Length: 263
Length: 323
Ligand SMILES: Cc1cc2nc3c(=O)[nH]c(=O)nc-3n(C[C@H](O)[C@H](O)[C@H](O)COP(=O)(O)OP(=O)(O)OC[C@H]3O[C@@H](n4cnc5c(N)ncnc54)[C@H](O)[C@@H]3O)c2cc1C
Image (cartoon, rainbow over all chains, first blue to last red; front, side):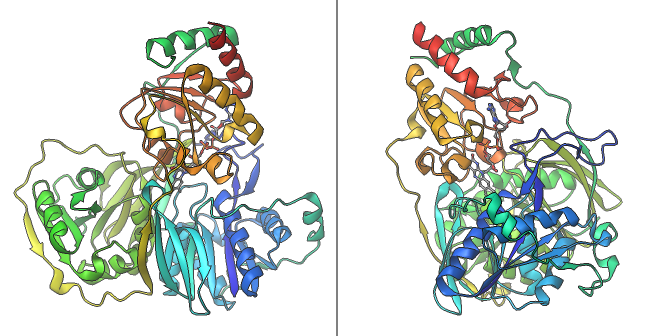
């Protein structure tokens, strides 16, 4: 099975306090810790496990700037066979449809049976996988938390739905799936693994390599445009307990008692 | 004005989801004067019950009764909507597991703009809709603008729009089943497997000590367990803790976990994502311990402690034990 996995380099929200920049047109990017999008890591692990079982190869593609190369390399250190970077100034400011258009052009240069994305990334949109599938006219399933290869023609996939219940589906290949966290336990990547792939050539494709007219993508082609970043004025919000740790703990105990939180 | 506004109604066993009226509220914010039509798909008596209930709030209800629609398979519903909707329709969906499955592909097939997980609507001017979204796990907000004259698919966050109580309509149910067209799909629904039941039932607990990714390590879980024991509380958690297999799935609070209704909810190292908070009902007293003062959880908590939980919680536990 030839599998393509789309991965994104994102600021790690567990590690960073995200703030709006002075101009209000972006977040403050200095000093941010970046990593591979949480969901994508599960997608790459799943692809590797499928190939381990049925054969084939895993290609990782990242759409971003030159820096995105580091996540491609990281996922290759995990065990992906090939990496591709899609970078071009013309891609900047793309909306979801623009991103899917670029990825579609990259898909067309290969011959994939299965395309995986993460269920969502740092913007919480969760849109690229479904759009890509519709553009490629392939079937799609989102929030996939189990995959079983039935034969060369179809898969049995579980989708995680409300309440943690699992919706089982049969889906024809080729198809696009967006992967939910928890589907597997992504393997650890050590510094040694990264070193092994440090000198592997990763092709960089821009608009011309992909045969894309710049007007179709990027900010010019975007129908949905982000106008600004902001943080709303703090509403009522929580009462923040102040003082020494000792004092805070004492206050909290009183509050918990009053609310029935201590037995 | 752009095309007519439609909502898609999620329902189960003859009862519409809470989002049904929230979607109408969101649609009303987009076009206050619009006559919004609810689309209800399914089969049999359950479908009729939902259509009748929706007609009490929506001026128009489109009913589509087909065997293949008995379970809501997004790949089938997408084909249906492409077959029956006008090309410039403005479609409002819930950003739930069906809306996430359906919305993006639908927008491509209708060749209209898509905006996911909308939490606020500012309004429409000269066909340009301005909405509010969140990014980076709710730490920052953005305004997104789009031209909806050629139609749009807008996914709105469950719980973000309050239904208007006074709205009542003697709506008309229009049977569109005959127009459904070809609904064949390359993804076929098989069955729903219910989530496993665990050793504990967090849904019955009055007091929950809930741990999130801020607990950092498997070994630290006992810090939360120690506090829970001292308080007489039950330990629950956010999703990453279950993904890491540090606690069992039955302890997960949230839209893809359990819905809890405790009196007191202590969130330790939890950022407060809407999927997590969506599992907390009944307005408990919420205490958040988080080292990031900007964590979204502080917007919904009653009381906040801005500290490293690994230091604060053991101290709190000692103090409770000493009493
Ligand atoms: C379809 C779908 C369904 C989902 N369902 C659920 C669900 O049911 N339940 C759920 O919980 N999530 C769910 N999620 C995931 C959700 O979007 C978030 O990713 C998740 O809730 C984040 O968990 P968290 O708050 O523990 O982690 P994070 O968002 O990473 O937050 C960790 C927090 O800990 C703080 N912290 C770090 N270290 C410390 C320390 N030493 N002391 C104090 N604070 C610290 C950080 O400041 C941060 O605020 C779902 C996602 C999707 C896409």
